[in-house]
Length: 219
Image (cartoon, rainbow, N blue to C red; front, top):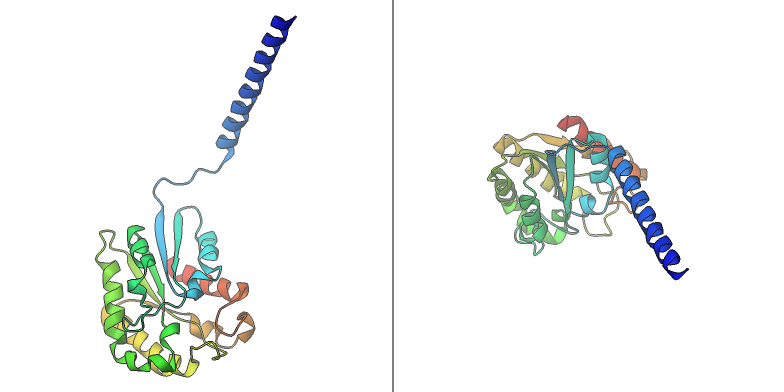
């Protein structure tokens, strides 16, 4: 009796294992096959990149042939003198290691502080240094510079007047001098304060607009 029970238990285990293997086989067969070599898109920026859904929305729009990496850093600046320069963050090196084929850079909001206006004279050279780090990669990525969204409430620090008068013209000048295209999400959102949950950071609707603008350029 004990021997029969023992063999029954062993048989039951074998059946369970076999059923599990069969289920695993059919599950893996039903999963969509991702391309082995996808196009890497690095989203570089500050908290407007890191703290919103725009990179995920962009990935959904682009589809399985792309891999989108979020390399945003809250509070990051273009300026090397600010104490929170993007180039001094580990995410900058992570973005380079990602070996992107496309780089989307949306910075400048945190440079639009009244306390940082003394750094604006170096903004263009600092931005060129940042962009140069990606241009030196062996993947030779296509680079798009995004004009950041408007600032509707300035009690968090960034000031829209400084952004418009000092930062955006320097962003445009940087792009012109390097021969790089820009994506203007500022103009798309300037009449939509309702798409910002705190006056600075886009909500889900605002993030989708940013993603849609970038998607339209990439494809």
